[in-house]
Length: 392
Image (cartoon, rainbow, N blue to C red; front, top):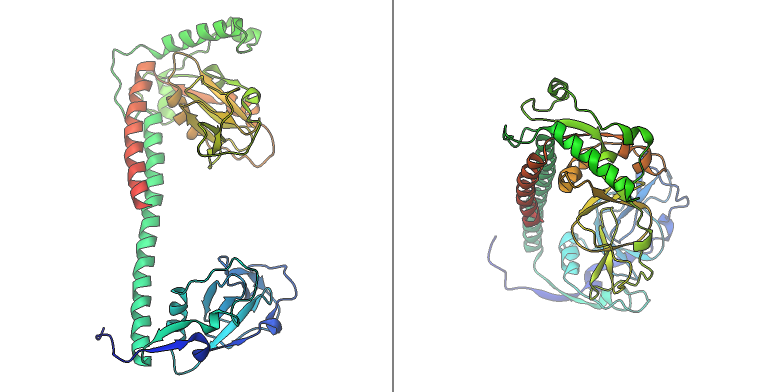
């Protein structure tokens, strides 16, 4: 670009912009449908509220700038549209200036919008901007557009990388859970012995009243299957596997006694309040009673089947979850990774742990092999998460 010209004018926005009231373009029916053709706009973040099939009152004198008269949000528009309300100004530009240059200049302005009033006439239209000659305006706009295109391309690449990282994480879990990520020591304890230990501990827990077992479960332990069976399912035949129900290795505790009483959270408080959903930590409480401390554990949302591995003390928001603990002879994080691989269509409103998840089969190697797998998976996932954080 040429050097900055010496002739810059200081002008008011009102000198180059004039407004039109949006009243004739307000949509009558707000039952939008993506199949319709005409967008209904707001100057706020959502921008396109929906699409209408109305044929009249469509604004076509674009390009223009729409200005929210109460928030001062602005959008540049170069297509036909209708609007939702009259709480905006439609700004037109003199032909002697580049409207996009004016739009970008407006983005550099600031305004205190604490008071509820219309800002265009009373304040914004009187704000000053610097205006170079038209030819220079055009060059500035072209350069900005080019830079924005480059930024958009970088963002697209970043999103593609983030998706690849998520796929890589899923692949790591898939390989790990089928015995294709870590080699097994041939001297490891056989999986059949693991089943015996699980059976003995379940009887002990039942005697202590921590879990309930049917008469059949008390009489006979789970049985192992020939490794040819696991090979057909996609598992590495060289690994010594056994199979049992998930409820054989995970038992649940209801979260009722750990529910927080006061939801006025504060980051200065110490105890996190958890959900098994995406938000995970809802906030922090200063309550000192009813804190769950038998970690590590798995929290399982009984309605969405979302799961989280937890290795710190916590309270919960509601009873819509199960707190899962493992049998001693298993690695709880291995079981967590296994559960994460389970796919389920949860389109009905019901509690899934007892009715579905707990009855599903889990394929287990020896405890020593579980520990090795967890260590390797942790290393891989930590590395991938670190890359993801740097991209964000």
